[in-house]
Structures are given as structure tokens and as C-alpha cells.
Amino acid sequence: MKYTFYLLFLTLLFSCSLTKITDKKMKTSFEEDKIAIEKVMKAQENAWNSGDIDAFMLGYVNSDSLVFIGSRGLTYGWQPTLENYKKGYPDKSAMGKLHFDILELKQLSTEYFYMIGRYELTREKDKPSGYFSLLWQKVKGEWKIIADQTCG
Image 1: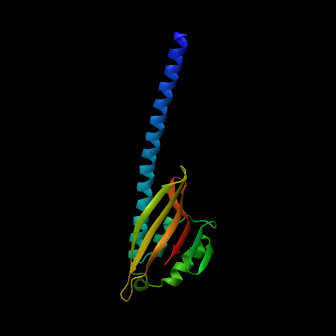
Image 2: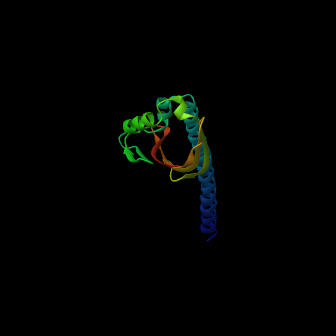
């Protein structure tokens, strides 16, 4: 009886320790992933503000499966999304200065994050702004946007 009690106690103790280790690992992983995603957003902001749409697009998955939903409707694929950006923002003046505010970042799994944010463009004659939601996926060890819904 004593042996069974000690075995049960050790099993319970070990499972509690394992839960704490798993929770700590998940929290550490979340923090590392959050920082990595924020770096991608900052790199996009910097690229945009330099007038470099090609570098801005590095934050998106380079795939036909990329989905972009904007004021002109639905766009599938990296290349059509790039072309739409270049058509809508033909020069640095049209691009203005971009600023992102991340309002929410939720981990959906070890491979996916969901983000809600706000953007603001400051241009000479206007200051358009709006909201976006992004679905992020870890692709080959890097966080990429796989779906973007932007409204303004």
C-alpha cells in the first residue's frame, strides 16, 4: 500500500513538473515568435518608408496561396499582390510614411499567429488610416503573412 501511494505521489509530482516545463517552454516560444513577427512588421514599415515595395513584400509568403483582401476585392498570389501595390503606390510620394500599431497578437498554434492592427500613412496632402488582420505562418523557420485583410 505504501509503495502504491509513493508511486502515485511521484507520478503526480512528475506530471505537475512536466506541465510547468511545458507551460514555460510555450511562454518562451510565444515571446520569441512574437519578437520575430514584430521584427518582420518593423522591416516592412522601414522598407515602405524607403520606397521599396519589393523589400516590403518579403514579409509575405511568396506563393500562389497568399490571400489579400483590400478595397479592390480579393487577390490571390504573391505576384498579383506585388503588382497591385505597385499600381496603387507608383512612387514614394504616393507611398508616404507608414506606421503600424499592433493591437492584438494571438498564438493559434506553434505554426500560426493571428494579428489585428492599425496602419497610418502620412502623405503631403492626406493621412489615410485603417485596420488590418493578418494570418501568420512559420514557413521554413521564418514568419510570413499568408493572409492579409486591410480596410481603410
